[in-house]
Image (cartoon, rainbow, N blue to C red; front, side, top):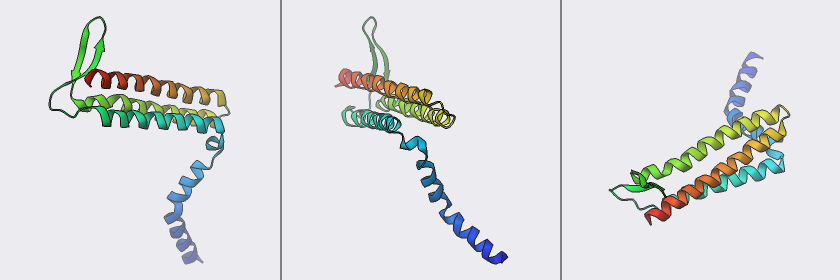
Length: 139
């Protein structure tokens, strides 16, 4: 009997990662339509931000303009790779807001989770605007 239990534990451990992954995404949090739409908007806006910068930023040896101010003109120059900090910050803030929204949703605070994900969408939109301005200045 002990050998049978050990074999069963070994077989379950092989499937445990996939099983836990399916269990995680099968929760009520991911079945809510409002949350699914907010997650979709977050994902699409972040991916479009990465793609826009990857397509339109010139990969040059010299510095590019990273920030332009109406009063002072160009106030931040840097390598073309530094333009990708905006979508990276957006992804980081989205993951933080997603984890907090998941925590609040489990504790029956649905409005707080909706607010966090909506704030993440607004952050993504603002970062897209800043990335488009970097693209337009350097194009």
